[in-house]
Length: 370
Image (cartoon, rainbow, N blue to C red; front, top):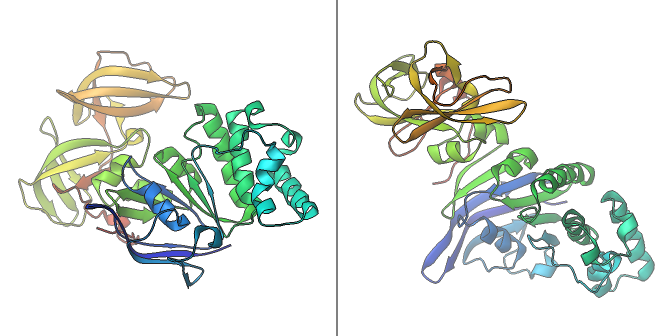
């Protein structure tokens, strides 16, 4: 397969800076996911790698070779789009082998490659069908197969599951993970769905406004986000945020005043000035409904999902926090409850959104670009 590096890559459309100097290294056989909100530049960055968008400045390096000026069809990459882009008049077999036919590959060699890939993707019994005779998941597998028969150095996926229903998305996520393991391929995958990012990636690249916020393994980003944006974007349901005021700092952490007046010492090593406005972050699974806790509020919504339940508690006017409990939770609407949590599970963010360093995270190296 292949390695890929980006060095200060930039892209503008007129006066608009879309990609603002991205640095990134992708190792051989890695599954890397670009994730971020709509308009953050993730699909544009993927298209620049594919050669479908010009790079205004910076360097694209594939396997050690400068690739900015290499035509798309000579980069050794294969792209799978959000839309399947299958030829409706061709069979599955002809769709998968069309690029090989254009390249002049002999019929026997084409058939052998198509049959091999069809076996991996469980498409062997569908080779004589037309796209209109296939389900959405089957069409997407054909699109992936069309990329696989070319034996690319790197696979590029641009939101390939977004047109599928929820059940098919789960099934295709499993199939993509299995495929990556079987092929040992380098894959770059774009999505706005952080669940896809968490479940598929070896490494996640979180983008915002054309720049990289954080790079790391899924659980590294989950447990040690570098700022409030990453903390709120990674994780489902999202991290809860509460406004707090710093009341002091010592060798064991920073003390803050919670809504309602309770004091909490958060184990972070950075110092802050008393009176500073800050944000406390706590994930839903770390909150507990307790008989006596530092936060209280009224239950406004209860979502029962079988194995677990989400309880939405209004702790101040217009502010809900989500508590994850077990499926047998018996709390009801409009109950007043107290919430507790361990300070070690919380995160503290400064007024500008950057995370204060947690004592247990000091040994972890995190890549950040601003």
